Image 1: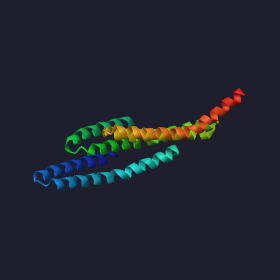
Image 2: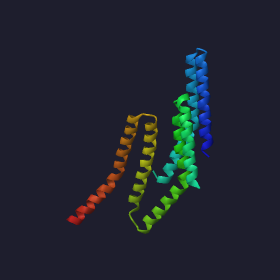
Image 3: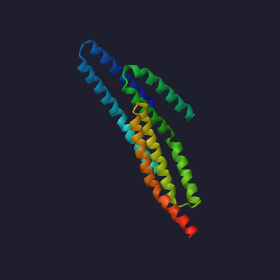
Length: 64
Length: 128
């Protein structure tokens, strides 16, 4: 159930890595850096929903 | 079987992390976080079952329910602190992990103080 999101993040990471090295080859280091940051933001937005759901479950279960 | 799913998820995630470590070092942290999350979601049902049985036992032995809910809170907080501290430790930030654990210890201490006071009063009552 969680495995598909893990694979998605891995694919995104590989994609960002390839884009980063390609852009470096073309001599545009700053764009490569921006591409990495965008990739990180996308990955983090995917993960943030699940983290908040986990903490809500914890709050309900342990009556925090 | 549940345990096989958990172990296989962990192994697959570890392989992906090793793969991704050279390409983009930022992403393994997301994968380890997601794996921890996925495993916790898998054991959610069994955990709530254990907690229900414990609380019904506590009610039958008619222990003061406030103490049992405090114990439950402390367990939950300890798990969250551990979750966060391990993630920052994986990322190599030992000092942040220590700070998270320090905050967790202080908050758990704050929760435990009422029980300590009740214990002290009980002892004093017995002695006097």
